[in-house]
Length: 262
Image (cartoon, rainbow, N blue to C red; front, side, top):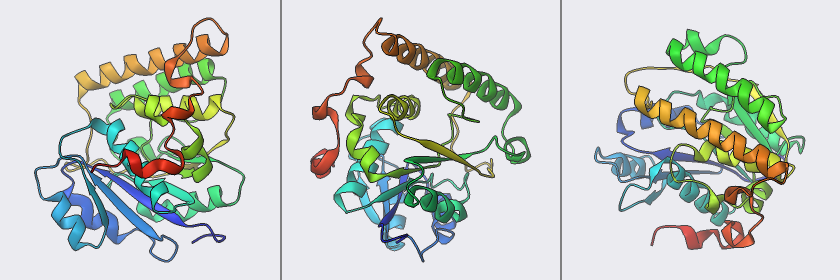
């Protein structure tokens, strides 16, 4: 716990058996109350290893996609009483040692979402980020800052700490089940008036780290542009964006367990 707030770490996993143990070994057990792994129909024994490590495991019987996996992660964390939820990829691309710092920023009440930025400082390229991804990250982030009216160093990190009130308030079930979920949830966070902070985070690109290829990166980039434009048009009142609609039926909320796999 931090400041009497229960902290959960959620691990959206797909074929993460090679890196899961190393990731879990560095999660700070002194402040983390719960570690939840959602397995998205892996074929490499991820679920069995997670159980051996003593994690709470939620298993999908079919692949639901990266966004679908996160929805289950957050629903499980809320159902198990988390006040702060830190999403950490189990592929050891991000340092688990920063969980304490990120959760503390949320616990302080100053921020509702804290993101671990690979761009602040010089960690991205030094950590092995491909140069084309770095350039695309910088270009897309500049475009998003202009469209969303905010100023972040990057929108594309997979390392995030959330307050419970954000996850209960946002219509997360309106977001995509694929990779663009990450951008839609940030757009929702800003649209509904929550505060976002950042912390510098080193990154480690290695052969076992999950990473989308060039073709999927192009599709993702197009989705980012579409999401940003949809946000701006919605804010101007020119066109309704479904994922920004204030629909209580699309929230995880107190009935979060209802979205979990049977």
